[in-house]
Image (cartoon, rainbow, N blue to C red; front, side, top):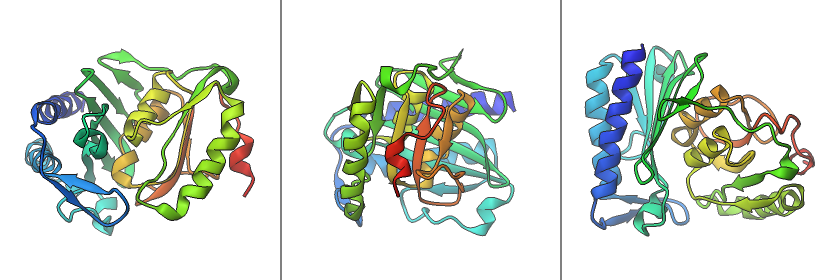
Length: 259
């Protein structure tokens, strides 16, 4: 299995080069506010499916683009790759980095392997269930600092305008509890930032399985607690709210306990 992970890492690096060298692409809108897809998203997804199928022919695929975005009962059996060719498409369109390639591998419906590639900073995050998380081969451990001494990061769930008021109310209440708030525009990257100790908390009111399938495993293997907003386990079957806390944030902060 270590060879499989190494091979997935190589595929992610090749996919990252496609992203990094792409010219400004044609942009297509999907349903939801500011929900974009580009020719490069589709190109990278096709590339990932081709290459990953060669590594694990028996695996099924769930991907954000090209109509392959519905979780089925088949995907909860055996192996299933869950891929996001460009997490942070709006960032990619406007050259506002980061954007990342996210590859999660589920086994019997549970997170098993994860690779996330940030090609702009040449950073590769990887994890295997029960074997720790790594960045460019170095083991990761999330911060043990309290929230009051840490940055927090959040996502605005921009495709779901009905969640905006609740999102910014949580952010408003969270701000005085931490050093400051940040927003990157990519859920997978945010969770990697918590995993490697750059910040100690990330939340978002709704993200899709391809946003968290890989990153939640990386964060968990780095010692983080990864749940939904209410503290319940993630289902790994579809969309969810998410709360990722580093080791130093042992309790769910009060803003998320008010509802």
